Image (cartoon, rainbow, N blue to C red; front, side, top):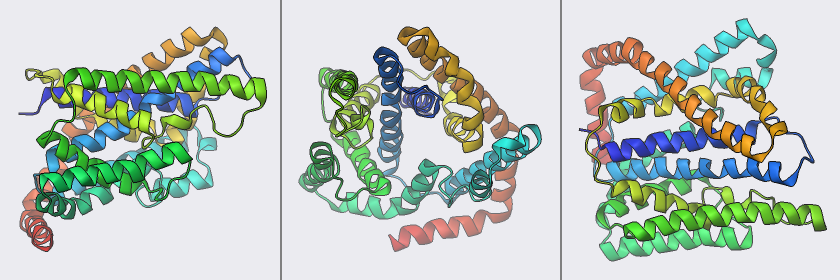
Length: 350
């Protein structure tokens, strides 16, 4: 039985990611009112929290588990399916959006960086058996020291100095994966601490966006951009991610069927709405919200995130039922023994 509290976190995280894309991919005018620009920036904050939570969830469940090759294959096939289908639809319906660069990325979606998260996620999954061995062989004190060193090197130093000594999303995913497992074994904060970390991180970043935006206009300040603190490894965003994850992880929610079902479409929502061709078509349709002021921008951004999830999940659940299940059943029938042998070999090597 799936944990509905964690499945609900998947949904919330993907809605936050959709709101982030509304903010960063929208066709917003330059030099508009400070309040409107700040509202757009505010909607960008939750996206990297959502990314962090997705990886924390993966480590939370997998650090004591085993890699299944079928799971990797399922993600690869799902990625190819949406990349090719969306390419075909727009090649017919609106070919001007299919630029040479987008075509190249659509044909090789995993290696081209069309979906940076999928590329890193698959690499993380491939490395997970080795990360699990590392985790199992560390004492509790060793795990704590690893988490502290990782925080200093990967989060604190880049936040304070604006210099990231490693600068790798994959290394950050490795750290979050191990941290997710550790948080399952050793919760970091109480409920009040998690709520404080979430609220403090959100309010700090929102305040910094307004302050930096104002300083840019008043004094020509250009040392950092207003969205400087939103990135996944920055201390305020990292703290907010841990707070949000902790609140959901400790929530004793009974099984809720619709939540568990809707959460199955979370990855599909990402693959649909953040396809480069799709987002070039989608987000300009919502640019009208800017002229209505900051309240309208925030409202449209939140509603668009919810709507994107609802529509995308409905599409992906239909794909799972009509296509993925029959295909994976067929693959399991034909390749069950080879796939199982590969899984065992991976575990033996690790």
